[in-house]
Length: 177
Image (cartoon, rainbow, N blue to C red; front, side, top):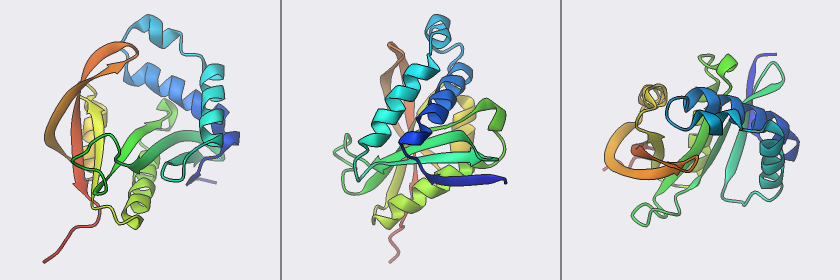
C-alpha cells in the first residue's frame, strides 16, 4: 500500500495520539523530564486529538501521514497568527512528527510538502517553523527540505520546562521582479 498523506479527521485521533506520544519520547529524551515523557498517555492524547480534529478551524490544516494504512505521522500548519511581523505574509508548521519506526521513509517530507502546498495556495509567501535548538535531527530535516535559520530565537515551555527554540524559514511563493 505504501505512503499516503491526507487531511486528518476525528477518526485519526488514536493514531495521532500514539505517534504524538512515541515521537515525543524519542525526540525529547534528555531535553525534558524523563518522568514527563514516561507519563505521556496515548489514550489521553487520542481524546485531545479527536476533539481538536472535530473542531479544527478552517485556517488550520492537520495532515495524517499513513504507511501501509496505519497513521505513522501528523503535521499541523496554518497561517502565522502569533507573529505580527509575519501575519498575512507567512504560514507556519506548528507540529510535524513521524513515529520512530516510520522515520527515514520520506513520510515527513511528504507531509511537509503537503502543508507547504496548502499554505502556498493561500497566497502566503514564506514558511516558518520553530525548532528546539537541541533537536539536531529536526534541524537537519528542515535544512534538507530547504529551510534555513533566520536568526529568530526565543525560549518556549516544553513539558513545563523552558527550552531554546530557533526559527527556520523559506519561500513559498517567491516574488520575482
